[in-house]
Amino acid sequence: MQKSITISPSIMCADLCNLEQDVKEIEKEGLDTLHIDVIDSSFSPSMPLGLSTIEQLRKVTDMKFDVHIMSNDNEFFIQEMLNIGVDQITFHIETTSHVDRYINMIKKNDTKVGIALNPATPLSVLDYVLPQCDTVLLMLINPGFATDKNEQQVSYSLQKVEDLAALIKSKGLDTQIEVDGRVSLESVSGLVSAGADILVAGSTSLFRKENSLSTNKELMEQAITKGLQEEAKV
Image (cartoon, rainbow, N blue to C red; front, side, top):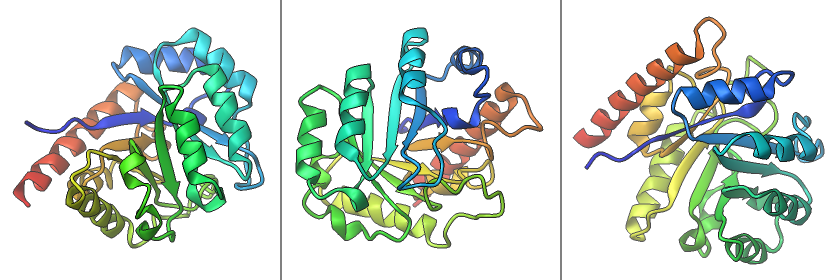
């Protein structure tokens, strides 16, 4: 049976003045997940959404909230997201001294847990905690610098996805691989073929301004199908 790929629209790429309207449009396209970046402006030089905005969003949609925390104070934001009621919380291992504490804190609230890695962070940091993770999020650009339109995915993006997929398979796990950062219409098929399960879709794919949301979704799905076909040949 062919595996299912999740498109997770990055809400920070939507119209921040008309968030509810954009979320409803995303819902109409049949997508069921929203990728929400929680940024403290310290770990990463931006802060697109406040906590109260995320809380209000939770009231207007039943979509799954896939939260990616980019912060030097993980515990505060994890607790806030648990209070709001989200479906998955991913935090960065680079800013975490107590990884197991946070994993347990999230899991005991029946919420999925993910660990995020910056581009140059080696997969070896997952040696002991991978079996506890529902998801590993691989950053393919440095977090928070997406506004620099000239920044490209790191050259080893596909290799890192392939290596993580092999690691997960070798351990007999079903951990999902999420990719974030310049997940473009051009790069989707390669990422899926390499083993990605969740695609964070932003300004270079689902929210490309030259096309409608519906057209971009169709183009993403075509690229996903191509990637799955290529993966099946391997």
